[in-house]
Amino acid sequence: MIKRNQLYSILLFLVSFSYLYLVSIHHAYACACGCGMFDQGLPSGLGLPSGGSKGVFNLQETFLDQNKPMSGTSSLPISQSQDKEIKTQFTNMNVQYNFNHEWGMMAMIPYWHRTFSSDTNFGLGSPVIQNSQTRGLGDIRVMGMYTGFSDDLSSGLLVGLKLPTGNFNAVGFDRDTQIGSGTTDALLGGYKVGQLKYWGWYTQGIYRRALDVRNGYRPGDSLQLLTGVHYDNLRAIPGLIPFIQLNGTIRYADTGINSNPYYTGLRTLYIAPGVMYNLNRHWQLNTLFYIPVYQEVSGIQLVPQQILSMGVSYNFN
Image (cartoon, rainbow, N blue to C red; front, top):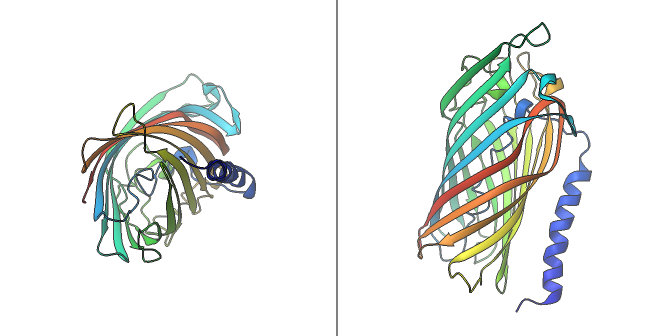
């Protein structure tokens, strides 16, 4: 069985992560209306490399409904927000492949369907609601991995690019609510996984910085962190693996003549319980339910009250 001091170490790590995230950066601002609220770099830690595996293919569906107006850390009535609702369905195809024990690659190919409701007569009289929608390929991410720090691939360095493949000219959308930013962004991150008897843990961080300006718009830098634990010996239901993770996002102010820096910026922390189910040695299902623990925005922005994600993975072992 797991030793008591090992369990305390895991719990201390999780508590420390959430505390440091909330207090270490007090002047972080980011993208308006949550355009980057859920653009994770990996399928929630599920595709991290492991010894004995050549890689993972993952298809992940995520449903995001931003219908709660906030300013700072306070909720507002919907009448005080010009934007009324942003609904997005993310379909992300994630691929992670290990060429050998030292080198590998990751790619995320997103397809988004987004609807946007806004009051075009806001502050002038009776509401006039305009409903817009866009769908298509989002911004593809490609990253190289160096995993030669240990034989079991338990830690790695990630370096890559976010490519300007998504549309950023959809009618009825501001630049910060488009499905593409129009910019090429640098990605730098790392991960670490570990196992203590039947308990496993993982942590990952990705920093993103736009390398250019496109049509007067440059998205703010972002930092995404996640950490979680899973239990691998649930004897009552063989193959079922419960887990829980923390997801933190910081995004800084957008810049450029077509940006709105005073209404762009957020810091969020979510707790996400979930389950994975191994159908066999290759196929795995997963479901996560994200619950906000902390949300802080600049200006007035719409945030989600919960996020649902589910997917299927194939392990090349």
